[in-house]
Image (cartoon, rainbow, N blue to C red; front, side, top):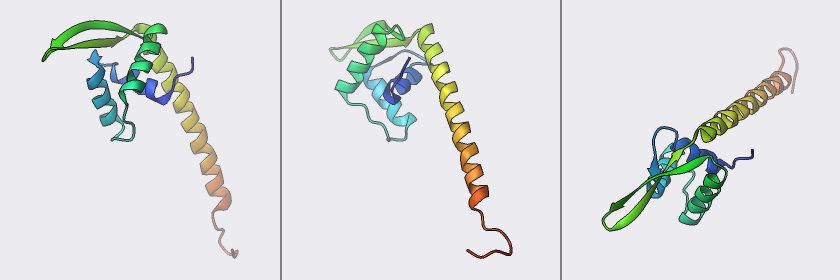
Length: 115
């Protein structure tokens, strides 16, 4: 299953507890130190896709200051997807670091040689 970075972050933000849309925007912003700021259209489109894929599910609704807030929760399938994607990314990072180490060893200046 192909998961975009935004979808991965939304799933991760739901890993510890159900959240509503604005709380997800805030959580993703905090998780990425402001690097990813979800817009409403992006968020709700992603939520719809994640529900359709069975990775999240509506949890409950609350009314706050006259506004309906729908909370979403991570499903077991969603938790499995985060786990699989995390392992895939960890493998990619490990491979990149190994190749960078080889590059550094290859390009390090050698004693007694110039340039």
